[in-house]
Length: 475
Image: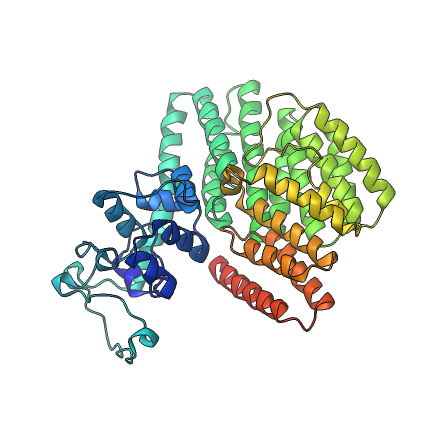
C-alpha cells in the first residue's frame, strides 16, 4: 500500500504512486488538463465514472463522462480542490496549497518524483514513517478502515431495513423491491466482489422473514424478493468467476421463483447458467439451458427474448449454422413481441437494435468475419456512441463488444485493427470473468494466426498484467 493511501485512510479513492508520478499525469496536472487527468484515473485505476464522481463529490457520473469526452471542463478553485482531494493529488501538482490530508505539514516537497525521474536514489525507509500532523497510521489500520467502510455500507442498508420491518411486512417488501431496483441498475458498473458482498448482506437479512411471514400473500412477496436477490447474487458470482457459488444462487432463485408463482427469476437464473457454460466453451449445454429457459418463460418478456438470443450464439459456437439461423429468426420474432417500454439498462434488460443481441457474436463464431465486423460496428455505434451512457452503465458489455470486434478483425486478417480493439477492451473499468475469457480467446487467436507479430506480444503482456491484478484484487 502506498504511503498516500495510508495517509488518506477513509478516502474512497486514492490513485497509486505509479500513476501519480507518471509523465502523463505530471504533464496533465502541470497544464491543468482535467480531461486527461480524469481519463488517466478512469483507465489506469479501473474506477468507474460513478466511483470517480463519488470521490470528487458534488459531481455526477454523467459529468465525469462529459469531462473525459471533452464536452465539459473544470473551472473554479473549489472544484479543483475537490478533484485534488478526491483523487489524492498533492496540492502543489495543481498549483494549490498543501492539502489537509498531505502528511508533510508546511514542509511538503515541491513535487512527487519517482527515483527514475529525479536521478536520485530513493531513501531507504526504516521503522515507522512520520506522517506529520495526522500522526502514525499503520498499514493494518488502513486496511481495517477499508474493511470497516465496506461493512458500514452494508450495515446502513440493514439498519434501514430493520426500521422498515418494524413498520410492517408490506413496508419491508416495498423496501426490498426498491433495493432490488437499485442493485439491478448498478450491478453492471460496480466491482463484482463489492456488489456481491452488499447483496449477500441484504439477502441474509431478508431470508430471516420468510418463515415468519404472516399470510400467504406476504410470503409469496418475500419469496419473490429473495428470488430476485439470489438472481443478482448469481450474476455477481458469475462475473467474479465463482461458478459454484453462482450455480447455488441460481438454484435458490429457481426455487423461490416457483414458490412465488413468478417464472421470470427462474428464467434469469437459467440464463446465468447458460452464459457460464458458453464462456467455459460448452455450447451444447449452453444451448440446452437456453432452450429450457424459453420453455418456462412467456413470450413478450425480456428474459424470453434474451434466452432466444443466447440459444442463437450457443448454436453458432457449436458450429450449427442451420440451428443458428432458426434461433435467429425466432429471436427476431421474440424481440418484435416486446412491449414498447422495456428495460434497456441494468441487469434485467435487453439491448434494442436492428438485429437481435449476439448476432455479431454468432457471425464471428460461424467464421463470417467481415459480416461480423460490420455488425459489431453497428452495435458499438448504436449502443455505446456518441453519448456513451450504456458504456458507463455496462462497461463489461462494452468491453465484450470490443473483443468481439477484435476477434472478427483478426479472423478477417486485420491485425492492427484487432489489436487496437483488444487494447481498448482491456482498458475498461470492470474486468469481469466473461470479459477476461474473451480477452484470453483473442490472445490465443492472435498467437495462432499472427505468431511473430510484435503487436501480439504487446497485447499478451497487457492481458497478463490485467489478469494478475484482477486475481490479486479478488483474493
